[in-house]
Image (cartoon, rainbow, N blue to C red):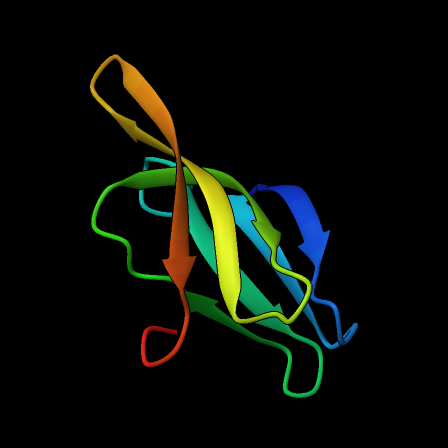
Length: 79
């Protein structure tokens, strides 16, 4: 799968990437320790994420139809 727009986690232990694994843009976390990918379930198209300085939130572009906007998600309990 094509991985785009990588962003390093502040700890350096993960990457946040945009992938089209399911046909549309989605955010995924890659953990170096166990070489695993985990989808961040947002419920709609998401791309171009970046971590907050504490690693607890992700800012990203959310897309629905022809409309796009900036969004912020708190990761506690989500991914």
